[in-house]
Length: 169
Image (cartoon, rainbow, N blue to C red; front, top):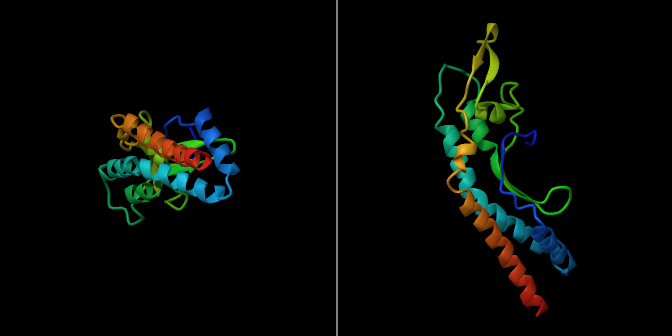
């Protein structure tokens, strides 16, 4: 698991993506083609990110905090991520850290935990208490549609491969 929160990884990090990226680099307008491929892959994952945002916003709220909303801050940090080349190549939806949120940068990960939760002070003073979020809110958002997201990302990759093949032929 990445340090930025719970990622939903589609396991698109296979040789086909690396080969496609190598082929794009050989083209004269390779930089533009890489941008297009990344944008298409991100667009394929946007519905999943929207589902995860909806799931965190459905989490119950208790208390009268005057600080920024935990749910809103976490929802704003959920987005699809695509990397082409380097140490990691692939596509995923990730909940990034929330460093500005009440000294709670690991909020997405802690809220998603199925056991435990996180410890916090009661209104900034003793005693300590354990809070739980909505266990599995992130992971469960992708259970039913994982195959559809994987297929959409593969389709974006295949479209780019067809464009490169048409240029060569």
